Each structure stands twice: as C-alpha cells, then as structure tokens.
Length: 112
Length: 112
Image (tube, rainbow over all chains, first blue to last red; front, side):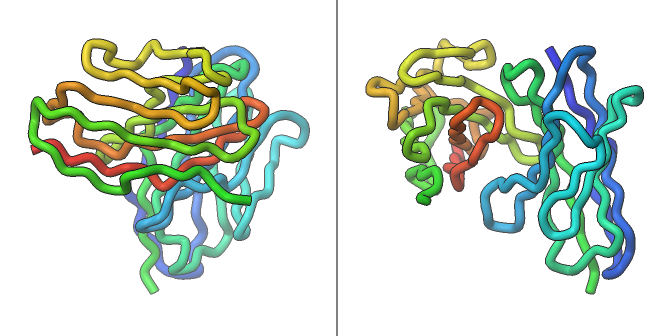
C-alpha cells in the first residue's frame, strides 16, 4: 500500500516569505496527487490536484505544486504567503483509484 | 450545491459507551468514505462504500466499529463500545468519480 510523508511538521513564516512544503510518497504505479488545506475551524478543502499532463499544477489562492516522478515528490509552493494562509496542509495520494492515503499534515503559521 | 453534511458536530462520551455518527453525502455521489483523524495526524480511511456496498474496510476495527449505507445515500458509523483512543475527528467524504473527494465538517469525538 502507498504511504505519504510530509517532513515538515510545523512551518513558521513571515508575510511575503516564499513557501515550499515537502511531500513524498511511496508507490511505483500510477498515482493521483492532492493537496488539501484545513483552515482553523473549517473542514478539509481541495487546494489542487494532479491526475496527468503538465507536472506543474496551479491551484487556488496562488498555490502550485510540482510532480517529480523520479523523486516521488509533489511539493507545494507559494511565492509570497499571507497571514490568511495560516492553516494545516495535507498531501494525499490515491493510487489506481484505490483508497486515499494522507500525510500527517504540516501546520503553517504566517506571522503578520 | 449543498456540501457533505455530518452530525453531530461534537460528542463527548465515557469509555465503554456507544456512539453513532451520521453523514449525508453530496446528492448523486455514489462513493462515500469515513475517515478517522487523530490529533496531529492525517485522516485515515476507515471504510469506503460504493452505493450501498463496501469497497474497502481493511482499516476498520471491526470488533467495535461498524458502518452501513443501507439505501446507498446516507451513512452511519457506530462505535460500540468506545475506548479512550477513539477520541478523534470522524470525517465523511463523498465523490462522484472516485478520486475527487469532498469532505464534511467532521464530528469531534471525545472519549473520557
């Protein structure tokens, strides 16, 4: 079964700093990749997804992620974070349309 | 479009008591999922339904957890009897095509 690793447990940034959150997965076959965000007090929302095609995926709110197949990675990036980006971010992998596996999450705190 | 509905939002019980959670998926979504999210961890899939049939319940602790989706729409998840380690947020999600999952707000369970 596939597994997902998010190496950063808690990231603290100042506004306007650049963001990169790491996500690695272990599965050799075809995967669908997702980043979900959970704002304080709210439920999980889809940020962006990769199914196929261009490995650089653009999502909502200026986020993007790059699928690097050779590195089994799907890192999330944003060039300039805002205070409102404070949230928990989850990477998820869905292999061959089987069950979704989530990483442990990365808590992002953006200081105003 | 209405989202995934869950109730109750919060539940506090004592260990060895029973508890049930309810989920109403997005209209027309054939696939329904129940996840357990323990504090500090990512969501873990407990059970996946396709219409009223179980697709995957490999991670469901069947000695105490049960779930049903009798008419292929609403679903209930039951824990009987509850243990302290069952304290978590129980998330329901639904999808139309099997990959894009939409999450409900969750039920936060505290077992004392």
